[in-house]
Image (cartoon, rainbow over all chains, first blue to last red; front, top):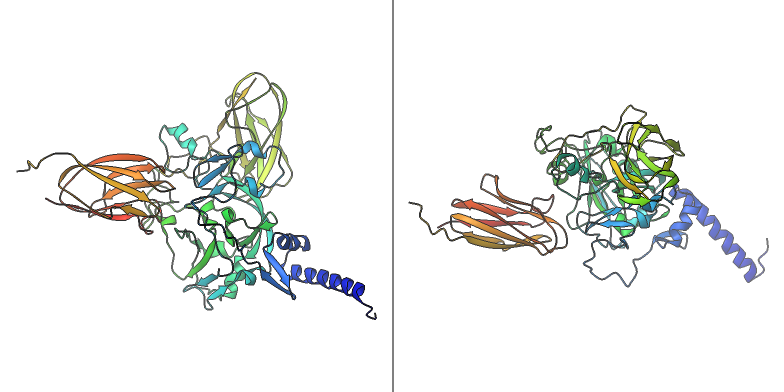
Length: 415
Length: 101
């Protein structure tokens, strides 16, 4: 077609831009919609056909005493300082995923502010033959996938040890809100490791964060190579927020939350087993039922376990009458097979109806109808997954309060 | 004979990210009360270990802004003061206690 001036040029540029978007999105292995979302969020810009990372705002946040960047109002969160627990009632009017603004925060120290211009990810160690240094742009240009998975703190449910045993396990006294499900977009860690020439003799992979404690925790090479172990750069279609690991975090589906290292700056790949304080002194089971496993103080945690929660305020109130009571259950090992509910302290149980998506490593939603009569109740929920795991009625005590997944009586008053 | 003046000794310690101050403290053998204040922004704990790594005093948790104390009866020797939360010692929360006449 002949050129005939500005109008044509405009159309040409639009067509070219659109073509570029399709091309870049395809290269990134993400949908066009998601690519545009990332551009809109300012994480990436497209100039002259190249995808560039966006420089951090010139008015960078001042060095702040703030432990957590995003607002965490008390109506939506329980405040534990550097940790903010999601209130389960906030999810009662929400959809399948937890929006970023409602997602729980667990920081071992404070959220660091990373300058993405100077940020690099090093992949190094005895287990790789081609150590790498990647920029943010490099990572965004690698093929990416999106998966819907939960991230749950190892100590979710910890407060219930005190209820059960009369003594507190040490650590943040979470109820059941240290969990969230999101759509995570990222590059399979396998892809990154293969580019670094991961050796057949590699045994452990340890991502390390850029926070002021350099929180770092190894995983086996087998786990690192699973298809849904990702180097994540987006959360629910938006650029990964600072509190959740900007610029890049690891996603290790089904494993305890600490494995999902935030603000990754380095990944060590080793032919020898690796250890850090987070798999020798903590995130190990210490208690009467457990023996030390030197150099670790006890068995080292990997997988999470099966739990359930109700989308109700804890020790809250509802009006008498007919309610559709909703909740969610999650297992790292399999789909949820059944969910049983008791309104009379375990004397009788009814089945809740499972709705919608139901897969391992994410949650299944369920509900049941309750003709609630005035009184005080402790609603019990017991899930069973398709691999035969069932929530027990008792969990052995461990000093650091991990993996409490016994059936919990959720207090609620009906007026 | 061990009739050392058993006047109670009080040692004040501050904890923050990521320091124990003062880094070196002196005490005489006998009863010591550690008064430990968390002047940082996150939780810490406080442990005193003898030369063999055995804990002789411990405060399980000190919230930001709070102060807790613990008593111990110490023999002469070198001890380590530290916060035992993972990574905190490596990041600098480690000090020295000399107990001597």
